[in-house]
Structure formats: C-alpha cells, structure tokens
Length: 203
Image (cartoon, rainbow, N blue to C red; front, side, top):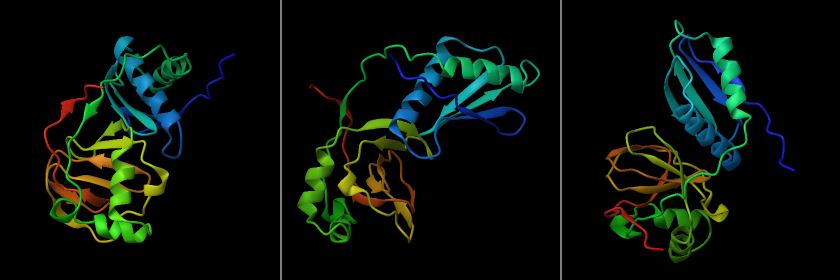
C-alpha cells in the first residue's frame, strides 16, 4: 500500500506567485515531489499559471491574478501534488571529464586537511558519486547536484572568491555543483576549476 502523501504548504509570494513548499530542509524525496509537480503543471496546465521555478524543496508558481485567484489556484495545486507520481522517463546520464587539484582545484588540499584525509581520498570519493541535478540557479547554468558522499559534507567558505572560472566544480554543505560560467563564489570549496566538454555517458 502506497504511503499517504502530506500536502505541501502554500506560501503567498507577492500577489502574483505562490511558493509550494514540500520540506523545510534539503531533501531528495521532497525534491522528487517538486519536480513531479513541475512536470504535472506542464502536462496538465492550470489556466492562469504563467511560469514555474523548481528548487530543492519548493516550487514557485507564477500566475495571473486576473485569470485565477490564490485560493482556487491553491486547491488545484494541492490536488495535483497529492496525486501519485507517474513513472518518469529514464534520466539521461552525463559524464563530465575533470582535472582535480593543483591549479585545477585550488581548495582540494584545504578540503582534505579539514576532513582529515588525503587529496586522493577526496578525489576518489567525489568521482565515485552518482549525482542528480536537483535544481538550476542561482546564476545561469549553475547546477546544484544531490548525491554527495556524506563524508564530503563540509562547511561553506567564509571568505568569498570574487571570481571562479567557468567549469568550476565545488562542494559546500551537503551538495556539490557545476558552474558553466565564470562567477563569484562565496559558498563552496573549489576542488575542480577546469572541467571539459559535457558528453552523454555510454553506460
């Protein structure tokens, strides 16, 4: 018997959006529900909804208040969110060739010292992971990935970097991420600052 799904919280976000919150913390199960609701709203559009923005634990739903009110929209969203998720299409698996350490990973040594291990151990654990794109943000192309080895969970940087190159792969908190554009970095520890062409995995 399938477990009963808890209804999400509906939080007004101004007068033209509602935040549909599935959890208070980063959680893979909540993220799966976020993405399922996002798919459902695209496959079964609600009149008046203009845009959706998925995050780790919530879905921001923009709407036109002239075409649909908050209460009516909320009722329809909750009904969709409580439906069992249909089988999803097989996810595409991508492999990203990278170079760790030295000039290609300026924080790798510090990360190893903080976690009381060796750079080689950090690399082995990180490269062995199976990651899933949980959300895109906060800059264009920045991919937040879930699935980081718990041993690699580490505090975020205290002193921000004014610029990290495109292709940087970082870890911070319980997540790892890939940046496809040069950007400021105050949140993560850079273990790779040079990744190469993205290509579909063959396995």
